Amino acid sequence: MATISGLDNLRFDSDKSSIDVFLPSAKGRFFQVSDKRFNAVKCWDSRSLNVCHVGVDTVKQLYKGMVKPDLFKFVSDAYDLESKFINVGGYVWKLGSGRWGGYRFSLNNPDLGVLVLFGSFYTKEKYEGDHLKIELSPHFILNKNLSDLQGCIDEIADIFIHMRQYTGVAVHLCVDVQGWQPPEHLDCQLVTRASKVRKFSGQSEMTFERHAIATVYGQGETFTFGSVSALQFSVYNKSKLIAKNQNVQEYWHTVYAARCIVEGLDFDSNVPFDSDDLYQPVFTKDVDVWRIEARFHHSVIDQFALGLGQDLLSFKSLGKHLTGLWRYALNNFRLDVSPTYIDPVWQFLRDDIVFNHDDNALIYKRVYKKTDFDLPPSDRVLKIVFGLLCSCYRRLQYDFATAYSYLRESGIYHALGDMYMRVNDWDWDYDSNCAENDIRCHLMLKLCPIEPLLFESKNV
Image (tube, rainbow, N blue to C red; front, side, top):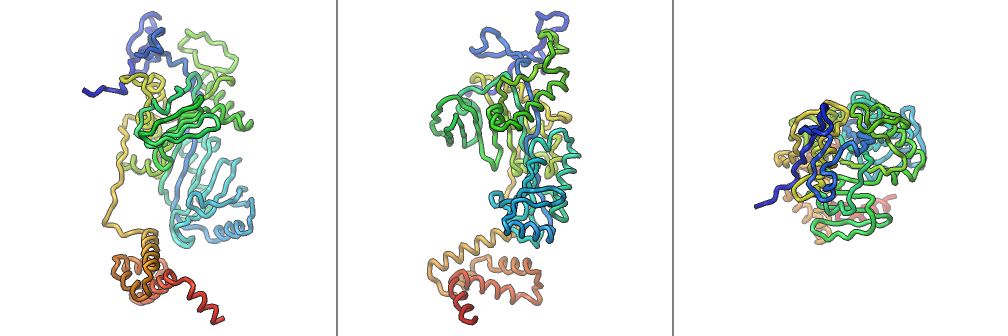
């Protein structure tokens, strides 16, 4: 018989009429734990965990639209001239290549906390396409409600493109805590279906594939599970990370302190431990803060949208689902205290954390999008297939007539013609021969790229 795992621990609260009486409670602060580490206490008190921060660490909003020609030319010229900084939309941006993200340019303003990826590599600037991606850092996101934040992103988007449409959104959700640290072998203990596990211990980096033997050296500082192109989960020492930059460290200490002040306490408050109405943990600078972070790729959000039957293309539309997504992540990356029960800290983080909105009881599941074989192939796919066919014809040393004959019979010839007509805004009634001539010319260039250059040079 299979062993049942991942069961919740029972929760209790003390009876207000007697501190020695404990009553079952769905949101009780005491967790009954069946593990040898807690035998002396028989329970875990959730007040020993200080939740310093709950929030969205990163938002990546994707847009489709038409680039503004004058602005694109200005940015392109500045990039060609190797200008380091440009002024666009009243903001000063550090200009660089966006090739790493599939875009032509990157514009970064660290003071504002915004990174813009502009101009798709896969679509010419004169055509509508996925030309814009805006990434937001924590200090831009903090203290803004959903409507204000989405409005700010859209205003920045309007600087770069016309006719903007939302095409997707990615989010990173995080919780920072004191009073807990992950077990040294978290990479072996966490229950997950992720095929890749990465662990950083000091200066060493190790990557473990599923079913591989994990070798661990020293105390783990960073654990990462899953891929960046899916649902990725990470647990790491936030204090060590921010200690590298004094300004960043001061910023986060201010954020942690402000959360405690909002909840009713200052740093110097002397609150009795037994006072349930007044007791709140206080952030302590000399105690390490650990971050638990769930990173949802936009393709994963699309799968949730299919499962919910809702449009989740913008951050604003996703806002009311953040708590549900967080619980989904902690259920899929689960820390168990025994073969049967979940770790009480994990249970608390999963059930009691709310991301600044009304909690809801929706069931979150991903629905994987099925390929629609009735739709025509995209222009990008056609270009790749055409290039591969030409490469094969050249390696087989086909002459032009043979290669052209095979291309016409390949099954993509008419789709190629449609693509040439569409890209050049031609009319089939008048310009079908132009599309055929272009295909022939490009095929010849692929088969013998030197001859046309030599021919043109002779005519000069």
